[in-house]
Length: 614
Image 1 (tube, rainbow, N blue to C red):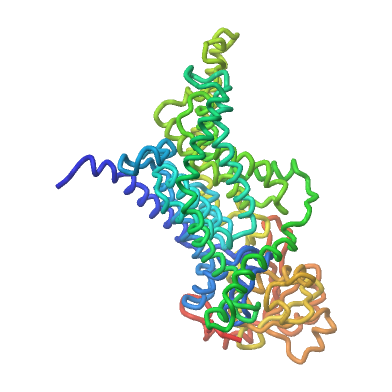
Image 2: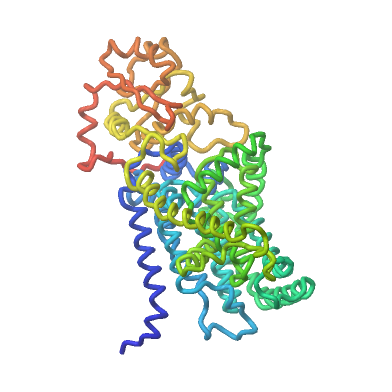
């Protein structure tokens, strides 16, 4: 029997599920078409090395092991392609809208009123708005189609936050345990999980102290606000009651969090001792493995380049990161700002101000903490603003936009100021312009970044994104795999030997800078299981008994290579490897030797690659 009340309760769930399907579609269609970024090639290379028996241990140079380990398992089953490399991040990003249901306001049957804070929840419309922002924000879409750990970290953190809010809103301790699980999954994604933890603590402090601070604001509409000392005392009492309710579940939550931490951060294979395999086989103790995965990982992180000092220009980095936030997530910024200003005047959502404070702290802190002002950093700026943005956009849609203009004290003193009406009118015009701009910007940025092939100047792409289509290079390397492979020529591509890059560099190894210059060609060689060789100069190249059919040279050294290779029938082609022509590679190809390799390629153009184990 159809029951309208039950259907009304289910409609937001159906809407969120539809938006999740849309999010997955945006992230999975043509996922492997874009040329791999240098960072993707770097992580995918060592992931495939791990699959082929080199072992794996946490190395800060490729960030946390979550994405490589999950992608490695898919490589074994589906093959090492760009689509498969990006698939874990795309699926996680596509499922992000489901987290909106955790923030939804609980029903009356959620639990005793004394054990919960139902005002923390979002309305049905706000829940759907949050899912829509997670599904369609251009920055989240673009970097969900990218083999990086930023989206998994942000999504796991959002789920952990949602479970925490759910626990506080319902009084149910099981949500605390679920929050522990998602927090544990976030830890092995990327090092700035440390900043997330610090911001979470600060957010909790703001949530406790804000009622007292808010009561001091002279423009509050409510005249019933208690004195600041009373508001603070009441807030502390509530915080104490909440802690007493949920602290018994914290030990179990920490234990649950430890499971993914140890599973992903424990060494695998010959890369470390003790290893996860040895512990599972009974050849190593679990306590030693847990210590290695936790304290050992922390010591590795502390000695890494990510904890070093920063000497860059703060205004320059801040300007770039804030610009990326506005370009790739303008609706999030506008909605969060609108909700915050409205909350200052008429408090209704206790969650808004603490999360905006988290976002502001991230906007001020990341320009100090990051080593490069990359656009993917904006993911961590927008994540805490998503929930406030959903609140703000629903209020805008319901015609309450004018409540966002702060006129002054509630007693009407501001209305006596000169030009008060004009200032209100201009504020409304500015807000309307932002709303229209946000609505227009999203499809334009999506089309220019994730839906159509990337342009030379992609507003969300980092400079190490090759603008040229490198599929001919990939195909050529695959063709050469059975006939000598590839050769890297010149000082730019120097390595002490061709096996030093078997695993990511440990502390004290200084070959990384040269090896990075080989990207993304090194990934294509490993993907095709093609052998690699090196020649430092023209003499070393001409003295070789056999030169591989594919030679890579830096443009600055291409002429000296051409002096040897052109007379031997090699054809020369240049490809840009950076968006702004900062990097390039010159390929020399002996087409006459590649016919045999072409017969070993699959019908769809991907090389047939058997996964080998050393």
